[in-house]
Length: 417
Image 1 (spheres, rainbow, N blue to C red):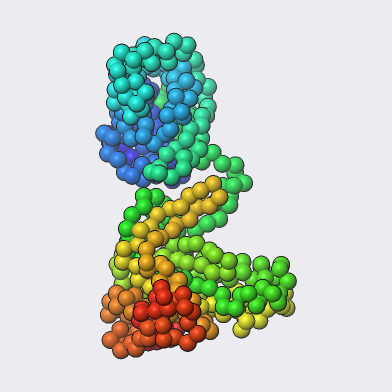
Image 2 (cartoon, rainbow, N blue to C red):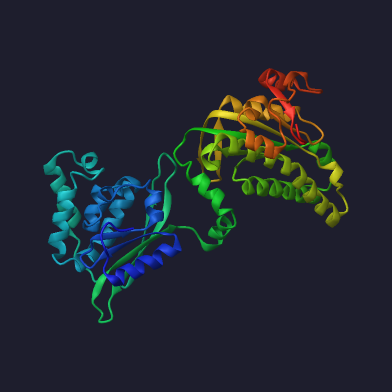
């Protein structure tokens, strides 16, 4: 996107970059920021052109706009030393122009006052930085690496690709800067196998906050007995097949896959993703019903392959519950990326699921009463005719389920209710 028309050559390049759906930007011949891709704007939370520094020299834009707060101080200093000589060469005023821009921008730089709150000290920092830097003709293509910061998530290493643009006569008309994760292609290949739309839903949860969602928990019944009876390789194959089938159902119903624990899993269907509370509830119930079928289909396929498993032995019990104020966000560590939710309703749903048996789908009264008449009819549910039982009254319910969710009214949803 650009706030003003681009010259035709740059406009064509912007169109090509847009089609890649990557994080990128364009500079003009004077090294001014003139275009930023939609994905990069989205990554930054859609700041205004002014906040991005559109039309300003790229260094001034970096230091006074949204950019500086998204990159660690160490990365910025390293990038300055690496890139400034090349920028000096490309700018009409050379070193002195860049030095003046940097000095003028330092008071607005988010790290400036932190490093040197006194203006005289700031000027000293400028002198020290530029003392050993001299213009250097940039190659047509070069790279650098920095650490990107998003909220309170761990920094992510990003590769910056800088490409010089020239016209048919060899005259510089600008530059392209593209950003990609600093990951090997073999690792990125694993990420690319995930569902793009679900990853998009996860990305919107970068900033933790309260959300309304239907919660789903599913678990394989009598898994301990199955584990003891089957060879480890066959049991692993079975769990992988069932887990994959359950996740596929969640994704198909616009949910977000939550934590996996052994032979069970969880999912969330956000009102904001499904356009309403009722649609979120409907999606969760449809997914819950489909999971019981998909799990048995997956088990049947494993059984046909190994001759060791019967689909009747692999029963998945599911529960769905309503969470009107779940605190949700991404959980990112060096070993995992997932969405997690906190709140009593998450724990309650897990306990309701423990009370389900023999392939039941149990739904709470709080969940069902969020259905509109249209969605209830589509599900074959009559909210005004449902008969509920509290969890504590269900056969074989554990003491933990009684303590945590014993008073919650639930009903079986596998068939029309």
